[in-house]
Amino acid sequence: MHTIEIPEANFKIYIPEDLSECDRIQYINISSLAHQLNTGLIDQETFQIQAVKFLCLTNKEREDSATEDKKYENIYLISDYLSSFFETDEEENTVIKQYFIHNPIEKVKHNFTTFYGPSNEFNNVSYGEYVDAMSHLYDYLETQDKTYLYLLFATFYRKKKVTLFSADATNDKRVPYNEHRVPIIATKFKHHNFGIIYGFFLLFTSFNKYLQTAKIFVQGKEIDLSILYKDFPTDLKQKESNIPGIGMKSLLYTIAESGVFGTLAEVRKAPLWEILIRLYDIRKRDFDALANQTKQENNA
Image (cartoon, rainbow, N blue to C red; front, side):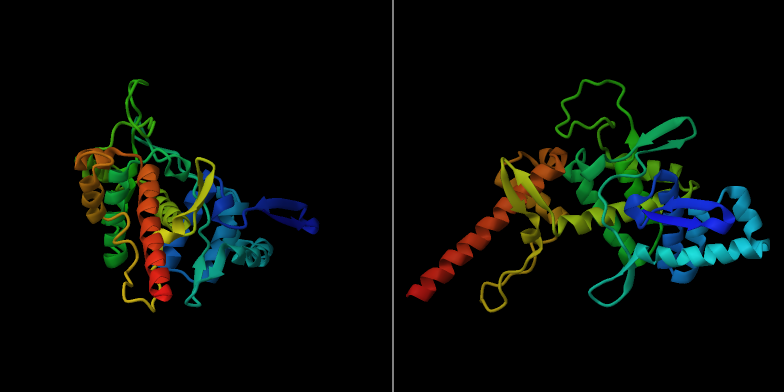
C-alpha cells in the first residue's frame, strides 16, 4: 500500500499499489478505467488521475473536484504514485500488472438473485468450464467484441445450490455448470457495471499468467507447471510446440481417450487442478523420454 499524506490539507490515506491490493469497489472502478486504457479511450496519465479520484475521493468530492484547483493539484501529484500499477513487458510495452489469483468479485446481484463466481485460485472450477472460458477468451482477444467478455463472465457466475449435499468433485457451492445456460446468463448482465465484467476478464487472464510459472505441492513434492508451456530443445529433431492448446477442446479428447478420468462428459466435470496435474505428468514423461533418448544417442 502507498501511504499518501498532505499535512497542510490534514490529509492522510492508504491506496493500493496495484490491482492485487484493491478491495471490491476499488477493483471494479479501476477495472473500468483499465478497459478504457486498453482500448485507447484514455492514456496512462488520465488513467492515473482518474484512479486517484476513485481511490481517494467520495462521489460528491469527485463531482466538485473539477472546479477546485487546489484539490485537482493534489490529485495530480498523488497520481504519480499510481505508476506502480504498471510494468514493462518482454516487448517493452507498458502494461497493467496482473499478479493475483484471488477473486475480488466473489458474488454479483442481478435483480433479486445472487450469482457466485469462482473461488480463489479457481479451486472450484471444472475442466469443462475452463475449456469453454478459454474459447471465449481467445474469441475476445481476436475480435475485441465485448459479447465474448459477457460469455466469459457467465461461464463462471451461477446461482448458489439449493442443497448442501452434492457429489460435485470440485466441492462447488454453485449450481452445476451448464454450457447451455451461459448465453442466457450473459444477457442478464449486459447492463451491469462494465467494471465487473472487465474485472473478471483481468482476473482470468491473471490466473492464466500465473499458471505459466506456477509451482505447487502435490503429495509433498513440488511440481512446476511451467513445463506445460515449454518447447522441447530447438536443436533436436523431435522439437514440438507447447502442449497443444492447453485449455482447448482438443485436450478433452486426448484425456478422455486415456480413460483416466472416464468419458468425455466425465472429463468435463473433473476438477481443473486434477487435470492440470495429469497434464504435468504427461508432459514430464515426454521430457524424461527425450532426455533418455538423447543420453543413449550421446553414448552410442
